[in-house]
Length: 225
Image 1 (cartoon, one colour):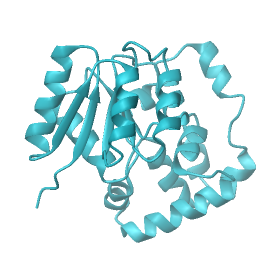
Image 2 (spheres, rainbow, N blue to C red; image 1 turned 45 degrees about the horizontal axis):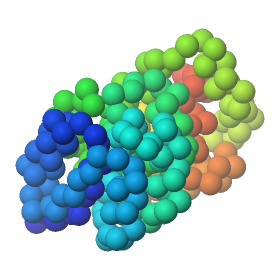
Image 3 (tube, rainbow, N blue to C red; image 1 turned 60 degrees about the horizontal axis):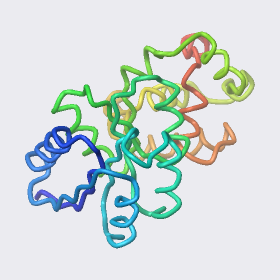
């Protein structure tokens, strides 16, 4: 049975709003879709509709001022999941958006099927990251050096079991617990147990922090042991 969702699309490009509406209408039949074209009205709608299941938020529409708009929206409506939808494809911007409270990042160049899958993952309670960007790291050497300022120490990584390392590696690629369970041929409950152990051992509070910390780790050297 398909679930009917209530989703807000906040984007100042009418053609793109139409495209997203089409994706939701075909992929999530019966869903209620609200739309707006600036941050101020998005804030009003979020305050008046605390039963929203998801907000799809353009990074560059009026009032956003980059990621500041995301922070404002998260403060105003902390219980509503927010996904950034943007033409931006810099790895650093993607990771910053997740750091500031987004539960996903969808690039506007994504194929229709990929957008549908991304939205479904997020509605299922998972974080969605564009794996092609996370893997390739479209960033400058200067930004890469900046990321290295706060790496996971080798001691913490060595405290993980081999299976926990494999789970963390797949987490860092943006895979959900269900995907990890399938790819590693283990139960989803086992994945959840590994994730809890990973968070505890790495001294991080949530999955997103673990993903951010592990985005530049060379897992091959730790999996050799």
